Length: 66
Image (cartoon, rainbow, N blue to C red):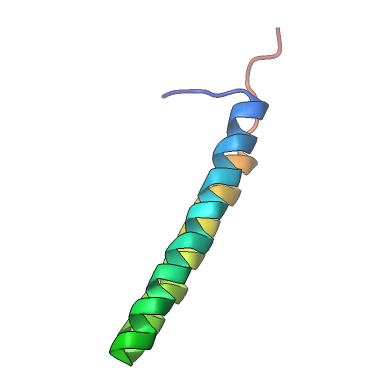
């Protein structure tokens, strides 16, 4: 399994959060044009999943102490 230091994990989490908001904006535009409840549900699920991944990346602790 690959291990990353704290700075790398923080930058990955920041990028995942940006992807979550950007993807939500794209889903929002698609939902606006399609007027579909499924697109709105997809937008919410996308945001929740990517935000969760970002928080999981941040929750991993360093195992290298020396």
